[in-house]
Image (cartoon, rainbow, N blue to C red; front, side, top):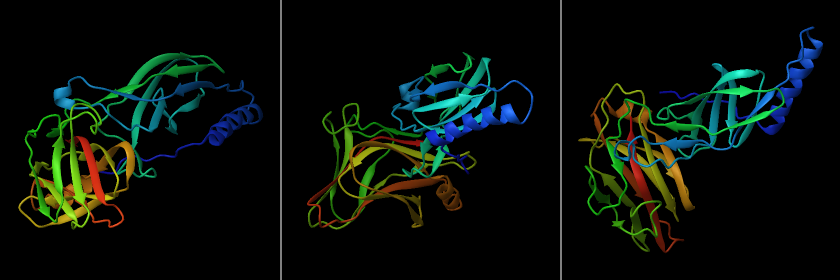
Length: 293
């Protein structure tokens, strides 16, 4: 599945857009000059209709795809002030955009956030502030929704399949992103690369897309990958650099699932922590692990 990607305008581009529109309207024809109104979007929030079905609403929405009366105004890095060459009652539609695989240049509309829509009144040269709230749409599936708030995992198990190290569910609020607990991967000094793998996760064919979501922080590099259930066919997805504070990660596994689907309609997610001799105790913390399709 190819996600839409867009141009992220800077303030200079926005200024140029406004000046260009005014100059063109005054010199290219005899109609009244088009005077823009402005739309201010600071952040986009995520709503949940049911925690049991959607899990956490933690997010990292950094971009907004903005439409006025179904006309695309552009793709904007948030916060943004957006010129709109329309007045009166205007229907504004906003899609939440994320960085796929943690890469800023891979900006895409997240297919599992339904758009926000609202009719607002716009006046020339005035700025209207809106507070978009997107939500998971009807019909999506979250077969894996691990908050790590209990010692027992829900419908999934974990195992170290290669190397040394340890993993544990930490049931305390100190290390967790939210809630009561989180998953810790620990590779002590001298241990070899660690590979932690989940039990098989269902990925039925014919879905529009497949994503892994997680909140994480880490003091060392780690890799994410998939292995087809019942097969040694595996592939690494992305490498993740250290983060001192928790970060939200959206991993697009669609292409890899499509490649593996001929082997099995189930996959194992694995996390590899390569040995780094410069770090005495390598640690990775993961919270709110979800598989969405």
